[in-house]
Image 1 (cartoon, protein in one colour):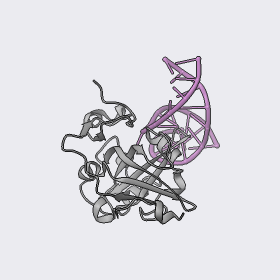
Image 2 (cartoon, protein in one colour):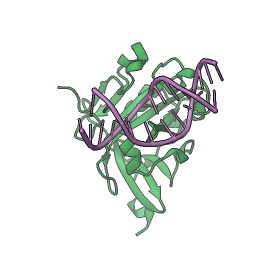
Image 3 (cartoon, chains in turn orange, red, yellow):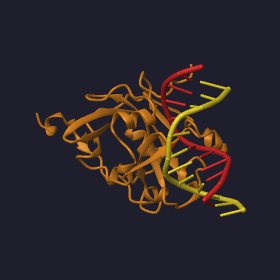
Image 4 (tube, protein in one colour):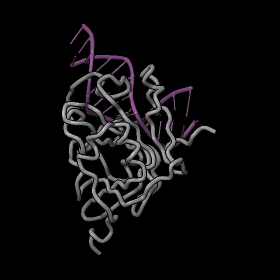
Length: 194
DNA sequence: GGCACGATTGCT
DNA sequence: GCAATCGTGCCT
């Protein structure tokens, strides 16, 4: 069987999708399918948890400190992967949004696992499950390596849950903004508080 | 060159 | 509660 046959059917999201307002893109990403292909082997999962980061004014965003070697990709064109190493042991995957020169991105925090993907709640484990590391930093989100597909699934009107972003308590007032978007279910990195 | 710390995770 | 583990950003 070929890689084509096991790819999810649908349209690939391009720069015109990611260039829009970052909060809007984050919400619209819920339910879309993240696809990773390694050596012709396809793995995918449905996006159920993402967070918006809007620099340089957003103190929680890496781009808060401006243009540095690490944040260069965030300043680049939309529809590219921003991957960084965290705590020396995990990678985190982001999608760059907004036009070139506007350093914003969306952190991918959890997937509903599809074929070839084990349970992977949390940005570090998700990257491990999909074989995503910093060598993919800066690559465009196009087939076959790494891309996002709209397969027609649409969350129900009340399915989207918003809340404060995880792990950014240092960011002062920015930490409280409801810029984490989830589809409630068993695959979130942290369940909604009762 | 040195040093503090992190958009995490799992074990005590 | 805390250690693992290392690149990044800021300081000297």
